[in-house]
Length: 379
Image (cartoon, rainbow, N blue to C red; front, side, top):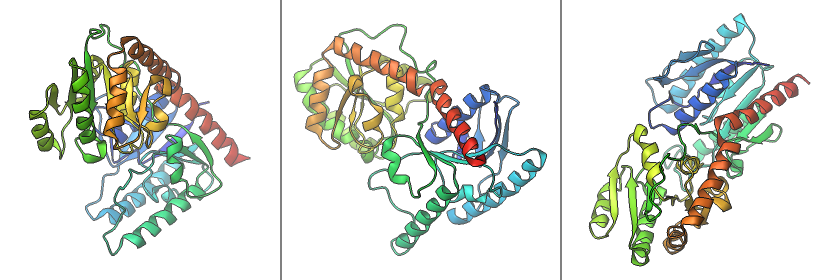
């Protein structure tokens, strides 16, 4: 049975085309839910959407505030509370869902204690990510955020985790917990009609050129790979603070190509043309580019850290410890020259996406969680 849903703050930017991970995932959830007949009222700060939304999706642009972050958050909560009250007078809501990122405290603005609240999917923190507040205020800010998170979860009926790695974000007993990640459009991200030649040995990195993405570790690993595999190439697609450093290193390495920033429209083609996708991240919260590679039937060599450790199946690639260039090189040296192994891994990854990570499969599980939340609240 279709639900009337209030979606509270689906990312700071809701988008179907801009390079904004949380906003793209939120759009995927909303689009698939709408296609199943649910009515959605979406309270969002900003939206940049090219696709015409169906009539059962109602966007309410509440805007960010002009002040510092804590005041912005309070202002948004006040505007969202007023919106909810006005809409609930027309017809009651069946559920409230605050999507990732589950900004601390926002769902507490919902004035209806009877409506079930679903939070997430939560993702784990980046290792070493800065905590809120400056050096003097940080301990107090952390305690306040932790208290707000616990209050949110006590109020919630259901908490969603992107992978078991996000269990560290659980702050309170009581809510039902489901592992439900974001999904992927498995029609857009699909195996190419014409596979690259078997002799190609192209390793692709697609992402922000930042230390935490592990790109420098990959460059060090590829220097070893290039010694034993003369056909191997490293393709680096992305931009960021390490661009100049990579440019200097690439000048002294053979077969390293810096593609620069890749527009979203071209990213599928770039992914389809590679032989192996590599995600050497130091602790990716989920690993969307790895999921995109899996959807394109590519083997994945990644770090066994954060969400990647749970996302990449053992039969679909190789996983190594983060910051270990030697182990990363050995994994690439095993997979790159073995065409049959690459095919088997890619086929396994594609099946995994179709069965678990397509938006159809993800929202099937989400609807089950919704039904359980409604029944639990009304029992």
